[in-house]
Length: 88
Image 1 (spheres, helix red, strand yellow):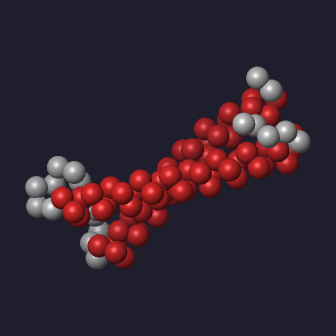
Image 2 (tube, rainbow, N blue to C red):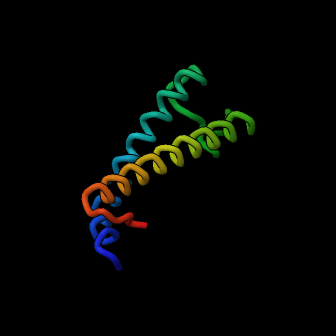
C-alpha cells in the first residue's frame, strides 16, 4: 500500500462521517422545499403513496451519492497536494 493511500485512510473516514451528516441536512432542507413538509416519507409509512416514497428515496440517494463523491474527490485531491501522489 502506498503512502498516499495510508495517509488518505483517516481523512476518508472522517470525511465520510461528516459528508453523511451534511448530506442528511441537505436532503432534509431540500425535502422541506420540494415536499412542503418537515419529514420525508418512510418506506413503511402507510399514509404515503408509492410515488412519494420512491421520489423521496431517489432524491435522498442522489444527494448522498453526490455529497460523498465530492467529499472523496476533495480528500483525494488534498492528499495529492500534500504527498504528491493520488491515493486511489
